[in-house]
Length: 362
Ligand SMILES: NC(=O)c1ccc[n+]([C@@H]2O[C@H](COP(=O)([O-])OP(=O)(O)OC[C@H]3O[C@@H](n4cnc5c(N)ncnc54)[C@H](OP(=O)(O)O)[C@@H]3O)[C@@H](O)[C@H]2O)c1
Image (cartoon, rainbow, N blue to C red; front, top):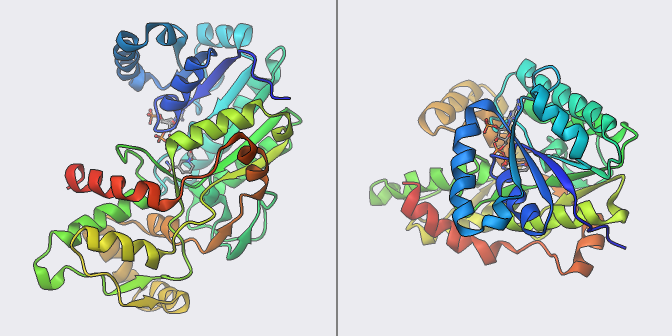
């Protein structure tokens, strides 16, 4: 039986690509939402809530903004903390760094210490119903082959401390003794492509190629073309899935992949997107061995510098794009499919995303 009676939910990262539509969806279904945002975002979120109130006043009335900072002692200001302790029965932890190149100290302070502090707050709530921790499929790091929802520490290497710290944070949640659910979405596709993830970097890069003179308007090789996948899912589907998992008793104590099991390979992605942008698609694959020899051999430094400076692609972002793990969402599907929630396939959203990119990202 699903537990869908109204809740009072603390949403961290409520100003973000995921946190904002999630907060609206919670309020629309009748939950009260305590939206935690950082001080510098308060005014912006206030304006968004006010604009939204003109359209759906009853729903907006269920949104309350609280100022908080994960890296600070106590996380929330005193009054906000009191409100949370008195009212909240659920926490959805969406806040995270968006920069994959963040340094180790900042990554651990935000992701690990921040999550530990939030778990401590959750422990103080009377009648906590669920602690939903939003992580990401990139905890698979450089793992190759099948990556299941149970897998966590498998000796995988990480391209950045940010990705590694997400894994450590998950571990803290798993061992917290609280009623938790961990969700690992793949890359989020927002209608305005607001998320600075591997997918949007790739689209921006292709747009730059599309702007070159005709003979150069081509992608000669598909890096890791048949091994790596461009795994991305619309943010609206992730929101619906999070709500379903939060209400599902079967989801308590589990980890769930919210990704596209039919995600295209890099080559399939390029074969579809390049022609739509007037670019000649790759005729050959740059296999993993050759790519990693290039990426770590004598050419590595100039190549990395070229990617970073000329193409605005830091190595951590390339690693985000180039994961060869096969992410398996079996357990999530077992809960979500009976509710009619299937990951939208790539070909249902990619044309809109490319069109949006063509008009707005150039
Ligand atoms: N975007 C993706 O493609 C993707 C893919 C897989 C998983 N996820 C996960 O989904 C969750 C939400 O991601 P998103 O795309 O919504 O990211 P986002 O748009 O960058 O939002 C994250 C929010 O977290 C806030 N935040 C960062 N550091 C904080 C701190 N120290 N204290 C308090 N708040 C802090 C940010 O505040 P400011 O606005 O003030 O910076 C931002 O509003 C994250 O856990 C992310 O890892 C995202």
